[in-house]
Image (cartoon, rainbow, N blue to C red; front, top):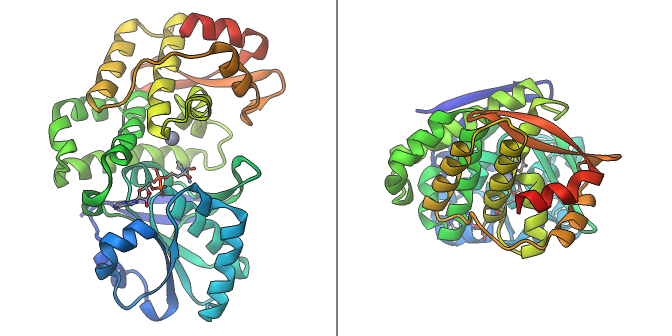
Length: 342
Ligand SMILES: NC(=O)c1ccc[n+]([C@@H]2O[C@H](COP(=O)([O-])OP(=O)(O)OC[C@H]3O[C@@H](n4cnc5c(N)ncnc54)[C@H](O)[C@@H]3O)[C@@H](O)[C@H]2O)c1
Ligand SMILES: [Zn+2]
């Protein structure tokens, strides 16, 4: 049984990597628990959740809207949910982000847990206590940091996950390898075929090692005032690419990591062999490593990014394979840097 503990000032969380949602009864009492379940998970896995009361969460980011969020409270009242109940979010990041925020705000906060059923959710979204919804076009503008009591990373449930969603998760796994633990990249490189055949043992190891990196970082800096920022490797560029090119998060982060790694080379921090290794691994996982960028529009979108403070934008760059640092760039230099990189 692979499991990990996360302890922070906002709470204590236990993460189970080889558990199944079919064993949810061992974690919560069905009589005083309501599940928020992603519609596709319900379609494929409903039989494992027999005997539980549930609210269906439509797939797509639209479920992280203020309208859907408030509609859930009416349903909780109808079910008679009070502060003695628990809420369990079951699905990918959309469902767990929403469920965590609903649970954190209803009756000033119920205890909650997650069953994470996407690869991205298991290695990233379900761990670390950030939850929330989008507002007026801003992602995750409303939310709290509060730890789920438990997270079940149901690796077996990934069998029904569509390939594109599955591939997206590998961008985050590769990220952990390059920012903190090169053993993850090395293991993935050797076991890539098994990973894409959804070999349980290989997946459990990849998820466990990735979650371990995130747990260590979150424990040292829950509120993202320091080290937690390195989890954004590839994301400053990635978010702009996602908006402009309309491609998935994982694909955008893949391209973003290439740009951030090239930036590290230009700063004299690493040699280009590390970029080649990163690019080779992303490519093997079916993630994009080249694209045509419109530099002017990209600079414009990045200027609007909420992660800039005043005249400075923060980038995560590599000092070595497995070591990332924050690099502060003057906004006035952004365009020329983009010209160099793209
Ligand atoms: N809280 C955090 O720290 C954090 C970190 C990263 C991302 N996020 C958030 O996570 C969200 C993205 O999460 P995601 O990539 O998991 O997307 P998602 O929740 O939208 O799920 C992706 C798709 O997979 C389907 N699905 C889920 N599990 C399935 C299964 N086992 N079988 C078949 N289909 C399944 C869903 O219905 C959906 O269509 C974004 O809203 C993002 O902001 C949060
Ligand atoms: Zn991401």
